[in-house]
Image (cartoon, rainbow, N blue to C red; front, side, top):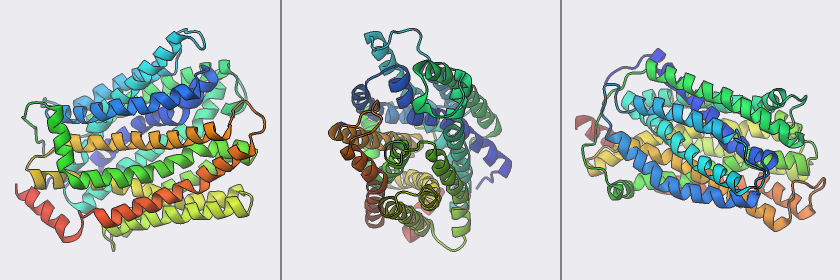
Length: 460
């Protein structure tokens, strides 16, 4: 086995910062930019998101197959990481900068739809090859854990930068004081997000460049078969453990994304003070940082399977605690934040474990079919995350439509407040528990069977 230096592991992981800067801008702030700055209808976004995901269902595995067939002097992953990062940076800037279309015009809606889809395509160009490199670094479980932990740590740093500094940066670049996005004028949001997206785009290219220049590809297996979308679908269908993984990971991820998506509405409409969200998110960031210690510590005396169950248990316990505080103690932000630390602690560990599991699914697929579809398998990571966000968005916007939520109202209807609280406190733990049950009963790449798979693949 080729040893990978700690320096190279960190160099690789740095690339995740840029990817998550773009990811965070798109999923956390694009909606408020489009609705509050450009006046785009929420109903349009409710329709656009599922349609974009349908295209991702075709585009993501297609890109995975293309990467698996790539053979250049730079390798099969790094050329796509750099190309994808550059294209995604350009699309990110164009998405957050209106070239001059009038509010409500057909041209504006077409422009948004086109670049909404293009963002997903260009993100896929960089994201799939980046995460696909992990199995090529190491086959040993502890080494994979370390590579995945480092990459996820930098991924969390990228998310933290976006969540903590975006509102402040948009206000400063937009020429106003304060950091409450919901109260900023359309002009401020347009100007601020436009400049901030350019900064994020430059950072994306910079960090991708460091990652590409710092790494060396190992165990390159090029798929020589002629490209076939049908073959890609069959390869996915034949990997039954990949399908199981996608199901329980999508459900658990959707539960966590529900919290990040609904929390601003909760603190604004239910708690009556949106500024409390920054305190809540700060405590979540503390939990995310501490989560980086979970796998290195637990791996000394626990299997990855047991660690993953522990992670889901912490997430569920944190959510249940939040529900108790929210419903019985009027949602005290410090008590909520304390529970959110536990939730984020488990979630961060959960994400690292899921990355390792995908690497195991690559080996399992080769063990079962004789073909190593590394990038195709990892293309499912981005797709399931997009699907998780879509599930979260559909549930949230559907609840808003049914209960009469209106962002322009100073006071929301009681039905809307109740729905927001339900989405904040009840839906996430239910999803985590369902995910736990599916994982426990259906996922089998562990123990002696996992060792059998690794041995067979290594010998081959």
